[in-house]
Length: 494
Image: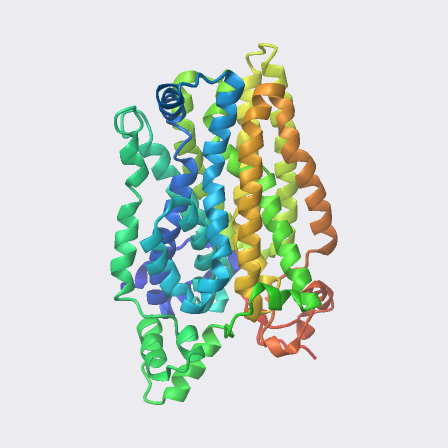
């Protein structure tokens, strides 16, 4: 792999940490490349399926409603049609929730094997989504150098947006979104599944997982594969690996993790973060954006192109988050962008109500508010919520915390996608209250309790309450726990 291209990364993205990012990529370019490709191919189908029903909405609706009449002899009323469609859209969340319930039992096989092999054997859209969202962050935690862990974790969000943009483009009427070709649209992500299955036989298990199982010879070979470390001393190879990547100990079950009060609070906070991400309106804006813009009488010819355009803009907006997640911290980035999202939802409510009075300019005000929401979500709320739950707990509880957070994420997805569509038909713009009220409440909880996790656990034996980390970091870096994404000259706890 040619690592010289890393020098082209502009300082404008990473600011004062650009030299650190470039040095890590130059030294560990192979593992960075493997992680980027693995995450992209694993998470891309998630974004693809989220947007799948958005653009060809009318085509698929006609198919479903016609079959109700032809097969069951039922002519659905407009209210019944809206309920059936909302159930259809939210069904992916049901499958994802089932996938989340499988996280604990199959985590013993290791993040790499689940992510690249077993999940692609299943390849059921909803279940696949739940497992991919839980195990992709775990895979990154086990192999990515700690100096750029936060930045690389933001790529999860970029991969979702990239998948959404591909799904939105492919679902246009002149691609695969008409009444004859839309079934092809559903099976296209199988291509990525076959690629990942093939790649799984060439990419070894993570060194962390192999070391936990006592397979030291394989672990040494894995370290050499990922990091190109050449040393005759095996102990030195393992030490160099642990210096780069914090140890991920054997994972606790969710029940065991909940027995510890401090871990329990971390898991619960991670669940609140995950719920806030969805109740800010993210999944509804992806799943129903065409319907939302039609409701405000936006230019009809442009509406089918909006999901693809929005996904591309989301990718571009996430780029600053790669820097800010390291330089500004997770807590302020999340909380400030949440305020932005709440304000945007208020404007969406106002402009939707005004558009019902045939105020022409209100549709453009709605578009501006929608863009405002995209700015807030993609700069902080979206990318940070993917990996923050794992940082709120000790390493041995990471899979339990992520599993619980992803489960809550999809329960909230089911709730919002199920109720928004019928509510929008019944009360119009007032339907945005299902985002404004919960997000405001969750934001107050997070403002009070959420710690800064940029400095995190280095040794699980320290038993530090994650809710006390913010106090420690306020007292100065010299007493902050030194597990995290920024290497601050090895600060010590005392």
